[in-house]
Image 1 (tube, rainbow, N blue to C red):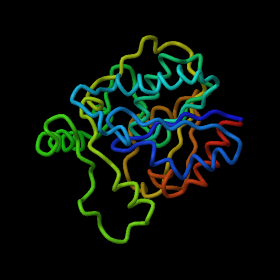
Image 2: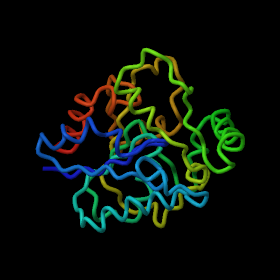
Image 3: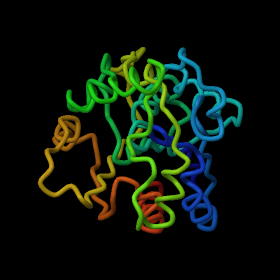
Length: 239
């Protein structure tokens, strides 16, 4: 049995993993999907001071208070920033790191450093114009377009503004030279044909210490293809 701790992406929360949790548990595994401060069912706790360190500490607290060991720590999208900080603090509790179509920062990089400059500028502008200067509205039209799959519409409708400082604060590692747990990058390839490959994906693809697995699913595979995603996660955890 593996113990999964899954960190969601920006604007999201634990609720978006409602299709993944039962599949992992039915396969005999334990799973935790904490919501980060100011997001999901903890949206009422949002405030301008929330930063990347806050979200790292959220997950560190789960590991410590639940006294979890041999954890498969999964970060989706922005969650890659978070699990990188968690791994720096709690290596002894981790069995593997899994970056699920996620950002892979180096020491001193922020989420904005990993985005295309135009995208980062759009988020910053949205925070100024529609987010009181400190939070970024979900990047989706309101109302949502008709015809979306029910699970996608359900999930997107529950997205909330994301604290800006979590994306602008650089990751600071205490010891980035320490030995890390085995690391796997899961690349969700659907819909990405012809798109530029992020520099961090190019970097880790050339690094023999990384395993890269491609899944034929979209970025929100936990919503649109949970069975395929769970099969991949179980394979990673047990191989």
